[in-house]
Image (cartoon, rainbow, N blue to C red; front, top):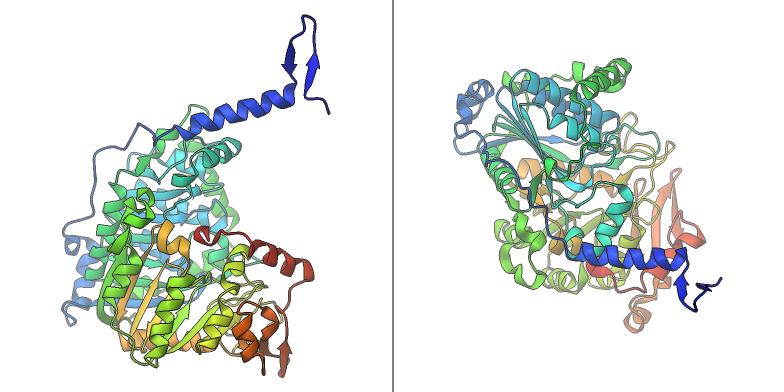
Length: 545
C-alpha cells in the first residue's frame, strides 16, 4: 500500500494511515509530559478518634474487656460468607464506613454492596470510597453518581487522566512508569471498630457468585485495637498526594445521575431478592452473634503492615526498608521449623531464592502452594514461576500446584469445599504460616509486582490457634485429590545441575478417581498453551510480573 500520493504542485502529502501514526506519536508525547491531575481533593478527613463511643463500640467493648491489648479475629474462608460479612458490617455501621479496594466491579455483588453503602449514607453514615483507578470496570458511572451524595466521597488512587477505554490505553503507554504501579490493598472498616482485610476484591468471582470461574481466597474479620491500625492505613492513603477526588476526571457527559443510579440499584436488589446471596445475608448471624458475644473469635496480638502510598512514585532502588516485605520480615519471628506459603502468583526471583536457601540451610521445612498452569489466570506469571521450580526442588522445597477444579473435582469431603473449591476455581489467597504460631494474611503475592511495584496491606497475627486453622486449610489444599505435587524426576538430579530450567526433569503426581496419576508435562493444558508460556519465558519481563 502506498503511504504517499503525488499531488499537483510536486508536493507529497501523507495518506490517512501516516496521519494517524503522526497523530498518535504527538498524542503519546503529550501524554508523556502529563502529571497527575491538578484538582486534588477536599480537606483531609480521618477515622473516628474514639471508636468505643460509637454504638458498635459500646457493644464490642465488653467482649474485648477480658482480653486487654488483644484483638479478635474470625477467619472468612467461604466466599458467600465473606460477602455477607461485608454487607452486614455496612448495615451495622452508625457513624463511618471506609472502603479501599484494588478492584471494584459493577457486577451482581458489586451492585448489592453499593446499594447497601448508599442506604448507609442515607441514614447519615459518612462513607469514604477509595479505589485504584485501573480496575473499576463497569462501576465508573455508579461511583460518579455516589460522589454526588452529601455523605459519600469517592477518591481514586494514582488515576488516569482520561476515562475513555481507548484514551486510557494511550495514557498507559505515554505514562507507563507511573500507571504501571497500582494500589493492591483490600480493606473495609465500620466505625473504626470492625474491619475485614485479606485477599478478596469486590467482584462476583471473589464470592463464589459465578458459574465459570471463582477464586479460592481468605479474609479476616477483625475487631479491637488492630482496627485502629487499619484505619490509620486508610487515612494515610485517603489524604496522600497520589489520591484524587473522582471529580478530578469528571466531565459533564460522565457525571452520573444519583436518582437514576438509586433506582437502578433498587431494581437490581429486587431482581435478586430470591438469590442465594440475599438469602445468605438474611440468614447469616455472624455480626449479630459478634455483637452479643457468641461469635467464636480468636484473641491475639497483631500488627498491621503496609506499604506507603508514595511507593508508586518512588524509584525502586530508593524503596530500601520501607516496603511491606521489609516490614513483614521485621514483624515475624525467625522460623525455626516450618514455613507454609500460599501465593497464587509466585515468582521468587534471585533474591527470593537466596532467602529461601538460607532458611533451608537452617533446616526449615518450606512448603509452597500456588496455581498450576491449568488453574492460573495469568500465564505470564506462571512463566516467571516455572523458571525457578527446579532450583527450589533441588534445595528441598516442597512444591504443590492447585488443580483446575471442576464440578467433578474430588473435594476433601462430601458437601465441603476447600476454601470455595467451586467450578473453575483458582487460588487467590496470600497467606504465610510460620512454625504454626504466627500467620500473615493480606494482599501481597510473592512476586516482583507486589514486592516492588504495587502497594499492599496485611495483618501479622501472633496466634497458634489462628495459624493452626490456616495450616489445616493448607493441608487440605495440598492433598493429592486437590493439588499436584511437583518433583524432580527420578534419576534427573545430575541432569538438573547442567540444565537447571529444563522441565523434562519434572513430574507431577496426584490422585484422580482414587488412583495415583503421574504427568511428565504440565497437566491439563494443551500444546499451544505450553508453547505460549515457553515463548513468554524468553522475554525479560520478570520485573513487571
